[in-house]
Length: 329
Ligand code: NAX
Image (tube, rainbow, N blue to C red):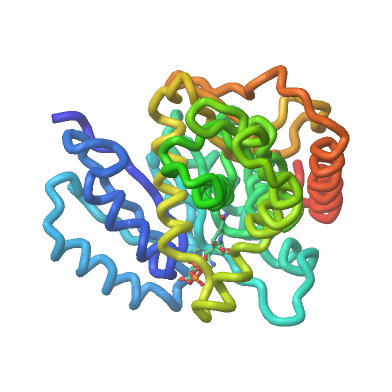
């Protein structure tokens, strides 16, 4: 038996957390022969609810779950001690009347503490995935406050956007979702993101050839993906939870296993300056990995339409970075 890995999940008693931790415990991500110790982290007032989650995990009797540690957001250094993965799901949700800038300011200090604690006590090989919004900029803040943790360990989640885009293209083309590949998300996990249909393929053919209605691709498709989160809130009366948890697990699988040769995955990572994106910004790109080292897919050309979309999401991320500049070390 391998030695256990430790996976921390903040906001573990929230709706995404509840949809996430059982699947991690089941062995679905790290495999049936990889023991896992879960570090479940919550605000002090949610620790009671967290005990209920812990009891249910016990009651699943998962063979791969060999330990549970409960942690409080009051003591993140203890909560993240020796963790190999830290999934930052918990953050203050956007309330009615709150501007995006207000949300960034409320959540920023949480991610200062998160970064400091990861640097202080997490395992040397730690990888961090930020889900809590605004996830790109929260991740940027945490990364800056953990300067000793290499920059290729930081990810903010855009897999949900990628999956939403995959399923829209599958429906429109009539192909199964498994035949849609290379569908990248560029930029911010927000309504400015650019789901790049130009480089996507269905059964190996370019999407703009398979789907002849380019007005749909440039209009309704992009808008549906950009505004899917809001549409789900309206329909369900609550924000995406199962699909968001699924995307978080999907991202972990994306980064720990080699990418299939005919595909890419998307996550926001620390830009190296590729495609003219400011170095150091947390920006979503098309990525591939050998299971250890990921890299940005190079050489994709963008026409004027696509470049305008990328410029718009870049502008938004620069503004977010400026809003939190006091928190960046
Ligand atoms: P919930 O409000 O159901 O759960 C959040 C949980 O986090 C709560 O239990 C709360 O007690 C806890 N929490 C808050 N601050 C914390 C802190 N400082 N430390 C530890 N725990 C803390 O929200 P949920 O629906 O689970 O969403 C969680 C986050 O995911 C939100 O920020 C949401 O905006 C974000 N999302 C991100 C997505 C993405 O694609 N990147 C999509 C889904 C989701 O909207």
